[in-house]
Length: 145
Image (cartoon, rainbow, N blue to C red):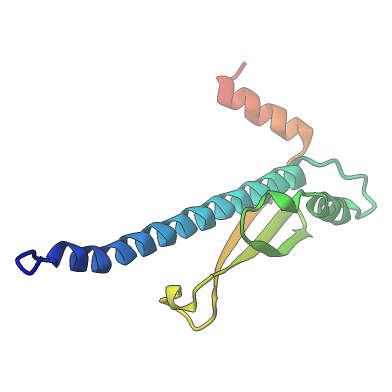
């Protein structure tokens, strides 16, 4: 046994934790990206709903969009909390803002800040159009039919 070299054991003891840590870190990055994409999808859906929702003239449009935002299924996010989901209507513009945060299991993974969380923010702004304008735009896109 004295003639055997143990360099493979030393290399494995150094490399294996690094590879495992890198795999876990990339898994958390993928989960964060997945949740960020879901937030973008929700924000885009609310913006389209706000641009096409009928308005009865009583100023209930913003409340209607807020109701739609509160009905969104929040359990679909894999690992983060949605902290802000705000809708504002000013004139013919509908603005939707969403923000979420992801708690990190290890504080050392946050290279850019001091807190143990990553944050993502999404913002969309659309312009409300009337059904007649929508039909005109559609016909113009289809070739003037």
